Amino acid sequence: MALIQLIYLSSLSDMKLESEIGKILESSVYHNKESGITGMLLYSNGNFLQVLEGETAAVEETFERICLDDRHCDIVDLIREPIEERQFSQWSMGYQHLSENYIRSFPKYAPFFKFRANDEAIRAEPGLALELLKQFSVDNR
Ligand code: FAD
Image (cartoon, rainbow, N blue to C red; front, side, top):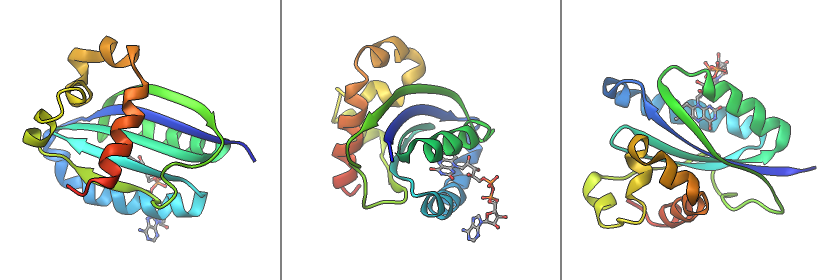
């Protein structure tokens, strides 16, 4: 069966919805286990960066559902490509909440967390998104 990896950025529709993140994660873990999806969700100051990996149909179906969720907006699809093997196989959906201070200490990645202003820069180097997700997936902040 063909595996794909999909990486996107989005923003909370309203900062008041930050309190929803726990529910989003609980629901993600439940559904992703059912669908054989693995991945990682990073959040900082109103912005999300997520990787989903799994069988093509399962990832596409999950991403369609995620796109319909009005708790976030400005969804920017960065990478959608076939993979030989999973890179986040240990998580149905790993999660890290990164503080603004912490992000500031990694200026290379800062554009991902204020991406509306940096959309073109991010699109020019989509490979950095995967690097960022991998970096924070092992660094327990
Ligand atoms: P739900 O109400 O969640 O599920 C429908 C039914 O599933 C429930 O009625 C219940 O029978 C069962 N169910 C759900 N959760 C549980 C549980 N914890 N225990 C037992 N039964 C349960 N969704 C994903 O699936 N994967 C993701 O990776 C993902 N990432 C997201 C990232 C972001 C930034 C955002 C904003 C949302 C994300 N979501 C993700 C959530 C997604 O947008 C949908 O809200 C979610 O998939 C729920 O869809 P649903 O309509 O099936 O509703």
